[in-house]
Length: 543
Figure (spheres, rainbow, N blue to C red):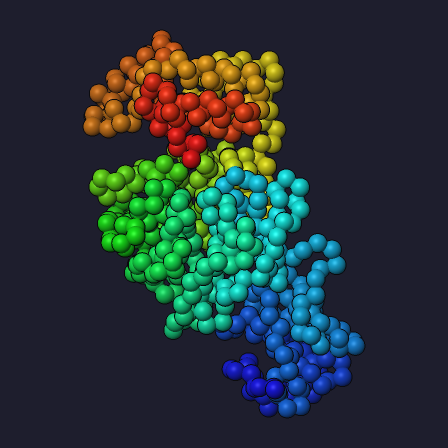
């Protein structure tokens, strides 16, 4: 049964008359060759659809739906059997008019911006142009499984930390939903859905799962809320009010959740109760006069793996790093300019917490030192906006999602160290303040048995680990400088004394190495190393 369109660009009578005039060469409203059918793109409104309409009566024949954005141009083939369309996403699509289905590309698979990688780095998931989620082996690119979400458009993808399931979230029609799909059973075993509400553009801006997989959280910008559910029962545990919320993340221990938004507020919540623990107006930490033309609205937030730091992506391209310790309010540690601007919260810490990947509104993807803020690597470029970035097994594996395409990046590049490179020099690079040297030392020798053996020997000999920041925090500038000089002399003169940052980087070398003995040594460090700091850092890297 045919029904009339709701709120067309032109009333049905005007649509029918429009086809009698000489049409422009490229427009949103075009008739087919015999003049009996009209294609109407809908670039304005909540539905990015194309309507096929009877040119005489204005009656709706069918609707063309896909992951397109603002269909702006349509054109029938001469025989009227196919329709081509394009829009703000820059993609040209081909449709079968009779079936109202999008036809596949002549070669390859059309993708979307939605992409994710499992924590072990062995699988990635992406969403194709038809909305199907495809699971792919990262080693050979072969598809392992695919499924069509039942309640949600797959705008957000997130593997469960144990890799046994994947969460899919987004909006479809009048519903916002999150679904959990099991790899073992290969079906959806849980889902959560709720109305889009008064704003038809509502969707899911952020999705996070606790390390144990028991808690699921999502943020909806246009509903000014974040939601927390119990994964196995589907029980709604809390609704967290936050005006214009855009970013959300759950700490590794699963006890705290953080939200940020366009209201320039940072809020910390207790999980699972939803109790507000702390809130901070981030502009209180900046010089407002100096930032007169800056835009510190917040698009995204992520916890460092140890839960002690937060990274926030601001609309003006700045990244701010915050202390997220349990005691007291979050404190701004430092900021650095990453890009010209962010359009989404494309930000992620590497599993070892040393590096921060980010993607901007111009398509750039880069890696930064998360402590110093220095750029260490220009990864590559998308043609347009970058929506998401995520590290895989370690800092050398990264995925990024931009408009109509996702990339899996190998960041090892040309960082292989020469066989005659001094191990002592590489260790000095680990301790260096030069970010390029640190990246080289961490990544270059992870596959070399002699270098990893040297790292293990050095770690075995360490008895005292010092954190300059913590031991100088309460000192004035003069006293701080004297203390730092004394610490440096101790490190230079005694190989059993080392800085915490150097130990962290050395352990990261072993965590990234594929050599079995490195993992065995990390396990020993986490359980039996004489120094508590080494044990703590090693345990975190093995989680």
